[in-house]
Amino acid sequence: MTTLLILAGLLVALYLGGYAALSLIWIVVGKSKSNTSGKLHSYNPEILIILPAYRPGPIFREVLEAVAQAIGKRNIQVLVLLQHADEAFAKLARTKGFFVEQRAFDHLPGNSYQHALRYLCGRISALQSEGEINPEFVMLLDKDNLISADFFDHIPSHVYDRYDIIQGQRLSIDTKNAISFFDHLTERLNDTMFRQAKQNLGLMVELSGSGALIETDLFLETVGKLDPNAPGFDKNFMVQLLQSARTVRTIFWPHSTLREEKTSSQAAHNPQRVRWFGEQYYNACYSAGILLKAAWQYKRIAPIDYLITLCRPPRSVQLVLIAALTVAEWIVFWWRGAWPLQYPLFTAAALLQVVAILIFLQRHRALARSLRYAVYLPSLALHNFSNAMKSLRKENRGTFIHTPHQL
Image 1 (spheres, one colour):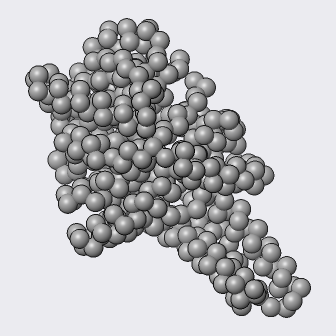
Image 2 (cartoon, rainbow, N blue to C red; image 1 turned 45 degrees about the horizontal axis):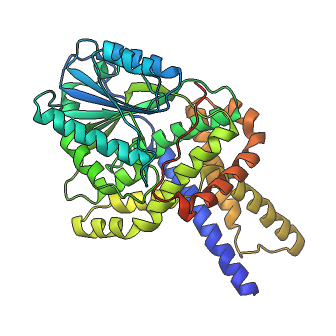
Image 3 (cartoon, rainbow, N blue to C red; image 1 turned 180 degrees about the horizontal axis):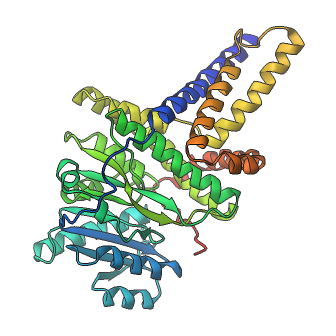
């Protein structure tokens, strides 16, 4: 029994310590490199913005206005898909010259967001056949995404020419409480660890759920390959990209920004995390073989790197669990005069984690506010652990849990 407990403790220590070490590496490597992309550029490729909106709230009017302002006189068209939406939104979109479709998919079995994307892809192909559009890139926006007026002005021609996917940066509309602040930090950590760091290491940049310019044929082909049983969208989209024979060229372009609403209540946070964790761990379990096969077949490290990313624990759970186990480790040491696992493994993991957190928070000037909200972390970790467990339930497969918005 004691041997089994020690073995289990070692496995937990190696798992948490390994991801603490990786977090430190990703954060150190993920420092932005200076470039000249702050300049404004007039290059004008044909682009199609697609905007699926399920039960959009009042902010959707601002979303449409922001899109119209960002387009200006550029060669950009917009296809809006309204689902259970106020007719006023359809009228406003049409006055802007946007293509407007009104459909519902929640009566169909399976992932309603995938249904919407497949429908949009069908409309894109039809419009191409009719000669209405011929976009070089497709860009997906969410119903709460306020795109910056100068989003496209910051992308030079050589970036369009060299890359198949150009991922913009998603910023927060506001961070009014602990939940929305930590949601904001999560996005910044994702930018640092999974976009900037991966880019600096020559790996594929992880895509956000929106704000990325994707080469049109690549987008249509990849949506068509999505696993219908996968909850969510973006992580399975990444899996399909990584198993493709084509080498997909990606870049994170933080100078092109959009703002989005962050969850500010536990009632909105929990279902969103169930979807996020469900998508993450579904793909970790059911796409592991696909990613390993792609790595071997195409001699690429990126699929293995992404599988490692998918297997990580929820951040808040990792933070609180390492802290709790470190305290327990020291209690046993003071009581028995020996480390429970022979070495202070959880203490080492805690040190790695603290260094990573300090570097990140100092870089983003968020240390003081993080300390002020730190008291909420145990509660958030408990909720996220519960959400992660719920996400693994069979009934969450092939679904899309829409996040309730306040704006």
